[in-house]
Length: 211
Ligand code: B12
Image 1 (tube, rainbow, N blue to C red):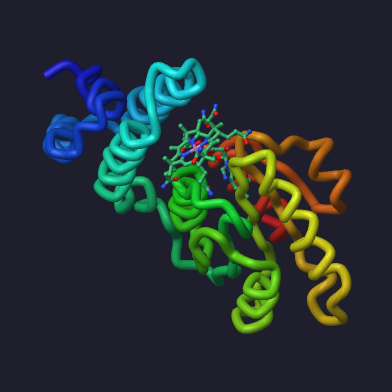
Image 2 (cartoon, protein in one colour):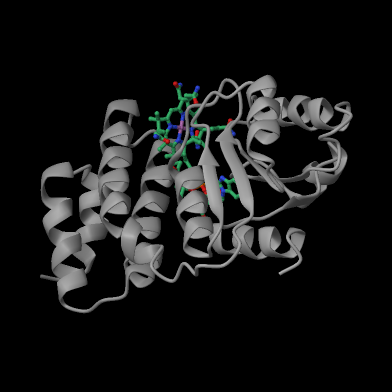
């Protein structure tokens, strides 16, 4: 089996074949990170490009997203296996209100778990108040916000303002990410940082936690 068939399975949204393909590569000793970086992410990049060019439509993109999630679920324990038993800081993560995209957010979560953090995932379409409640309940050090739509990235500002106006939580570090956001945008809304990828997100969270 060529490793490219996984990339192909993402593009075709072939949920049925992808589990077996990913397992076969893992059994052959291929590194989980390599499968993610060289097969799954490039596959999803092709999907994004075709969606933009109107060569693929929502139902097909949804199938691709499902195939991606299926593959990520299989890789999850392998990606997270270097987790260390040290005093774990808590990170809250979620996709902001109005936004249902969660593949990138899930990758960030998996890699944070892999780096030894305790991660509370609030899911998608999360209102500002929910981020506040969870941070307070779990005494989070860092809050990670994801947005994939240029319309919902503005809801990140609402979350940052809610934290800054909260007497006990105003010092919580807020990291943002997702395709439409940038370092400049993060500064403009008063967030503490931006990271373009999941590994870069881990580095930033480690910095915030003094590691
Ligand atoms: C898959 C997908 C969907 C799936 C989502 C399934 C799911 N469970 O997530 C479905 C089909 C449901 C969907 C729906 C829609 N989508 Co859509 N979707 C995509 C697509 C093709 C891929 C996104 C993806 O998963 N990428 C792979 C992941 C791994 O990458 P990522 O999310 O960028 O994450 C990485 C980084 O950004 C970063 N990161 C992500 N989050 C975070 C968080 C933090 C804290 C940090 C530090 C880093 C970080 O790390 C990740 C890993 O390295 C993109 C195109 C694209 N190229 O982005 C369009 C795209 C995002 N969608 C788009 C649109 C318009 C929509 C819809 C409005 C379509 C419609 N007409 O209904 C709806 C909106 C639904 C909603 N309310 O959210 C547009 C957005 C345009 C814009 N700028 O606003 C895009 C860009 C497509 C396009 N070119 O037009 N979509």
